[in-house]
Length: 248
Length: 283
Image (cartoon, rainbow over all chains, first blue to last red; front, top):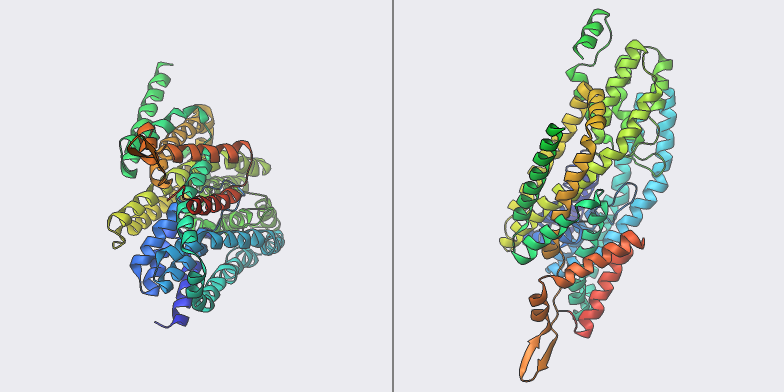
């Protein structure tokens, strides 16, 4: 496949990811899906999977509540996987993921505060007139095009014009920095878990945090096992509540 | 409920059919499209109301008024928003037919539902289910040494099935029994219980994530007498994943108590990693 075609396809994958965020929200925009698909396009599924796991892990627990815009995992994993495949090394993807994610976040914040302020104004205008075509135009059609211009197109440019600089970039960065970034990526998960802890409303259930920590860290239970423990604890509480309600 | 249905049939009122509800489901799928800072999900909500308003109201004036009503700020978790769409559809239909409810109450119910639905959706779908499934997918990929796409495929199938089912149930159940459900939710303390169960699950998962998501190891050693002691082994003997646990709690304290930006902390963590590896403290 020529680089032009690959760049176009990668930009379409990222665009579909953004459409998923806006419409059905089935989570196909997550790195664990985007990076392997980009790997397939770039001719190296294995590196795609490896970058997918690394970037997904970095952003796994990132839950930004309400109006906050998180660092963008979709543009990040799409471009990072493409760069990793071009360079033939997953480490390149891991090193570039976070900076790209933060640039993506800035794009999203700017888009929400400028372009979408305008489209929502137009939508409101058509709503007051009762014009259904106008509402659909400024809710579905124009935002979809904007998503491509804001995220798909930059991805295309990043892959097509950035490809030749990737090798220079790797040669330029010292080995210590690459392994330092890997170590930092290992700790970044802590920020995610802290964010996830922050979203929990009922803090009186905090001892369950230690239950999860104990089974995973001391007993070495994997994520499926931890999920089973969570189901057990929720079920026990459910039946206890049901019983006490019946007694009343 | 059956009484109202009979009344509506007798007086030839407009009722939404199954087909209309499917239409609402499709129109309202844009709930998170074109969100801006001031109105958030209002455009998607207004679009979702098109099938209802076009069917229930005859006069242009009524239609305009109804559309304008839904351009108010709306913000909740994207999947559970469909439940609000379903409830609003039922209320618009009732208002159009009987004029016996205050139109302002439609927005009041939406606003009342926004907070609890966001709390449940964020903690169960985004905070528990999605991280668990993604974590399982990641470990499947790692276990196959990056050769099998089974993990991502499983993630896709489960997440798509769950999210699309929630959307379907939101519109259909919200329309059928929305008002009753809202009332019984508030009476029976169902929302509080759901919040508690979500909290339990999320806490356990967070505790479990420490070992798989946060990792660091130190190559430092020191000699005591003639034996060389590895600092990492000593720390592991004290408590496995001690440093990841402490670092996570520090991040929690900084984000939630000191209001430090999470993005800033991510960057700081990266820089810290580079510096510590350079100094030989981390490997």
